[in-house]
Length: 124
Length: 471
Image (cartoon, rainbow over all chains, first blue to last red; front, side, top):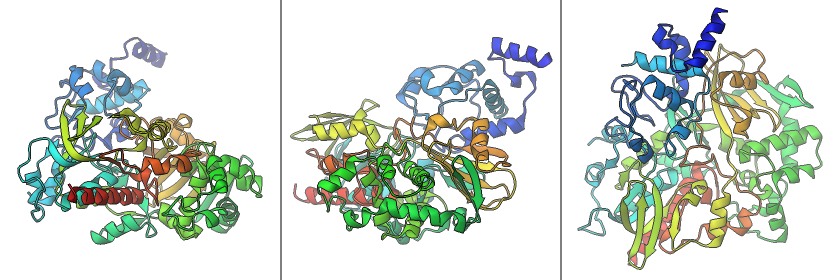
């Protein structure tokens, strides 16, 4: 019953991440983030592997990493990477920002996106 | 600037690397235009995969003022080395062999270390017979498979005696084989149904698509290119790889190059006039050159506008594209296991799966012909696909790069669809005025491989070098 409640809550408020509730499962987060880590570093001052470094991305303006050659589409996006924006983007980046160079179909499961955002929150 | 710093800058996504900075890395060259204007070059090479990197290196070494234009924030094209599970791992083009003359000579020249796929020492073989999983040793698997290969490759002995001259035996029968799909040809072979399953699966991995998508004739080249030896074919397509990944070779080639590099900049329109070529980019720039070497993948060329328009044959071929559209995935499973080589049927989520690294937690590499059959970002689907071969495996993590949706590749490796080799290949390689076409997808020999990219890039650079001498 408790888990059903949680599920309903997640469905109704998909942007309330588990991270905010202090239930951040780092093991799960690291596993899901392994799909991102081949292209994105997340440590402070980390190298550009393919996409921009993600240290401090939560709350950052889009297209803000100096010297990273963002696509014109992402330069024009001009949003703040709030948890809600990140949820939307990570679910289907190429649909949210048509013309992005990020070749990724997206994380379709909310718990996967929560895990990734949780890890991003930790790295700031 | 030290070579390492230069490489680091490229890795850090520095969008423009100045000619001056790069030329201090190597001896200075005489440029053909001593006083040059900004955004004006002798040659613009479009696409920084192995073909473009080779072409821009060779052109700039000859003294041509060269710009290498790359759409992504990195060089390497359909090769990309990254860290996964503690290894420098190639998520695109990976393996090569000493039967591939262009890449092997680069490996020798720069003295690069190689390593081997763990699967070369496989002790456990898994395959499917009539929908049932079978397991055995090499001698239970290979003889049946090799007998099927022999039937499949039989026309190669007649038609590809000069495999680097792919149209040498052009004839009515040759055209007939080109118009036939691999699947159609397999139907007619005198082998068992189980053997047909093996060859269909093999054709599907080679074309990285349904076996009915690729030309039977085009599929036959790899054996010929390997001296008509099946073991040696596997040596070339799946045994050796660069120890530090393909990016190490790109780094060496770039350190040897005087070309200016622009990352994150895609060509959108090519306009030729009597005074030269203008390349318009997605960053609203106009770049000018005497010649262009177009080294972008075949499957993205339809998105680039050419003025005047290119030949109808090229337009049709660019629209049609190559067949490569499947998945490649690295999967780490819990614990140490026997080294496995697994080969399923064509319609399975992964039709090949083998041990790539014999680590304490084993790392497998899998191939599937169809991204619709497996969501590589869904751990449960990946686990299910692995368990079709290894029922007890527990997937710890996995990684795949989706080359099919990457706007600058729109596919994986090149195999031609029926008819392309005999109706379009020659024309695809013919320059359009001042624009030359190069790339793995245009190669004479190992088309669809890193080797073919280097072959084609070097050849086109040489043609343009000769033309520049005569201006």
